[in-house]
Image (tube, rainbow, N blue to C red; front, side):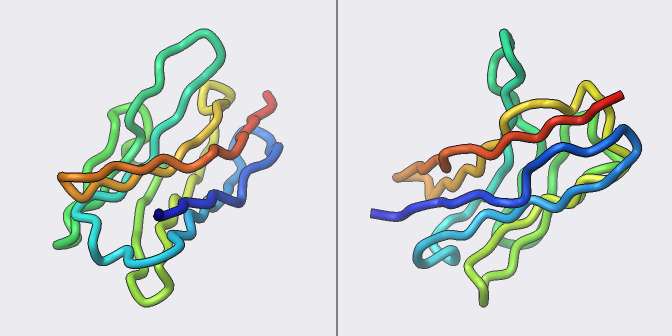
Length: 115
């Protein structure tokens, strides 16, 4: 069983930055897609950013130019650098791993952006 453990969430003022980390218990290399999703209260979970094993990335329109996803296979970790945070970025952020045959979710980390 693979575990995904997120960290780095917290409370930050608008305009600030946070870096989320997702530690994969083993074998990040086996996952073709690593991604971050978020879910705000009363809303559906939505894709924030994804990174493919070859290095290509994809971002949701609201975060383009502000968020950066990266992966370090040697450390079995995926990161989400979040800059210029806005109150509407407030949500629980979830790490996601997809190997085409198996999918895993982390437990989530709360990000709260105050105005």
